[in-house]
Length: 211
Image (cartoon, rainbow, N blue to C red; front, side):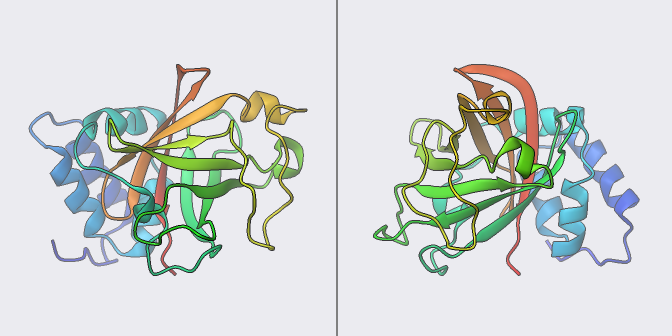
């Protein structure tokens, strides 16, 4: 699909998405084509426009559509410990605009890493903690699990210090959590949060920043 020019307004693109995600006749491939046709700037703006119902419907629509792996989050061309930003919006009552930042750990096969390190970047991190996690592939569903019960053994020097997700206010935001990520398009994923295996009805959308 040809890239959609930025002369299309965000309102127009958002309305096109709303029609597609709510139309049973439009499959996940149509949604992927919409996102793939956007410029990076318009794609990020659309991701950060999606409401709770839209994220929920998107998460359900793309179930089983196409695999997402660790190399979709950190492409093989990136160096070990090189930060890759994924710009996001969640459906929480607060701290909605955020980023998940990932990196590949030293010693991993760039083409087939077994895990990634990452944390959540947002303005209230000094209160909630950085929300460190380890991301792994779920071979059964071909999705990615973002596991806050596991902390990375190393991270880029520019990242904050690793802090437990089970202490202080971090416990209520990240404690005992595992997020599940599904592919939407080349750059976009959508996720759902679970605590101790129970889905919370909390969603988020991300787009990889290749800048």
